[in-house]
Amino acid sequence: MNVRVARRRDDGRRERPRYGSWVGTWGPGAFDNDDALDLLDALSGQDTAARRQVLEEIFGEAREHPENLNFTLGAAEVVAAAAVVAAGLPAGGAVAQEITRHDYDVTALVIPGSDPELAGAALAALLIAAGHDGAWHRDWTDPRTAAQARRTTDQLASVFYRDQHRHDQELPLEP
View 1: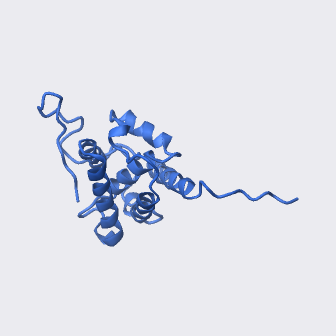
View 2: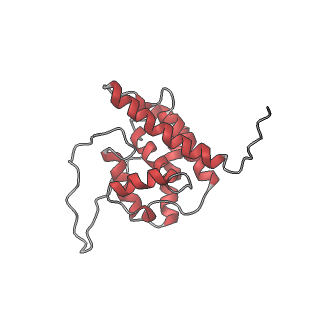
View 3: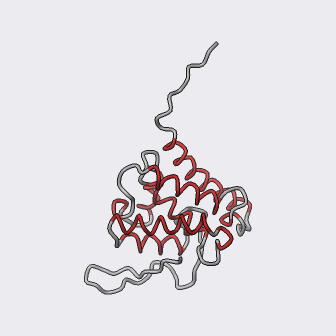
């Protein structure tokens, strides 16, 4: 599922795209590619229920058909969708700032409240698309950029892991 929606200005006319017509990746961040920005464009015009449905469809497709990553669903789209969910979690402040850096309203994108089911689906899809040998990591040619891309997805995963274990009690260390 590639979500492609043109943004419209307040007067209803189409905006000029902020990025070229060729699909591209210009950085290792979760939103540093055309597919990610197309997803943010599509989500920002929808209500919470519709945004959730789009995200669930992306995560379901990644989980059910991982062999199709980069064919029918891009790994970059999965990473961006997971990042949107992470931005709505208590530990997702840095991800929310990244959305804002790309001139999007975070409140128009995230699903309000902590939703363990959606967060679990996002983490599972993220691990498929960007786990150890995931499609997200296959095409980086520069070792420094590849390392930055891995840090991006590791940071996203850590947001989900912190959310999953936020109620765990720490055990005291014994001498």
